[in-house]
Image (cartoon, rainbow, N blue to C red; front, side, top):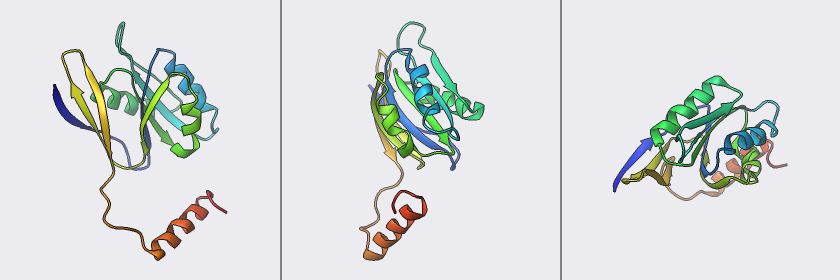
Length: 160
């Protein structure tokens, strides 16, 4: 077995959802879940089929994000992996809808941070072992940090 990390390539203004799913129907069902979550959401998704022709299946409503999802899905190359990129929306707004898609097995991360995917390669193929999402902690929040966090959530409309 060989281990490596694959850096997800994406612009800073794009959010990533990385998961594992199964069955060719994933692409259509994930598309419908995302499209139904917000009329303003821009997205692209790619799914690595792991049997039959083993193609990267793709869909979305933004050609740039679809191409980016395909590029990253090919780089990760793990069977049944699912790459979703979002603009004009946040993962928190679509995660529950994605988790309700019957084919979705796991969500590894949902983030705008830089991400590295830890991948194992065996004779059979490739697997995602985990992700490195952003940076390590530098300390513990202070009372001032708590106030700033809560103010940010209010500005974003997540708290009253």
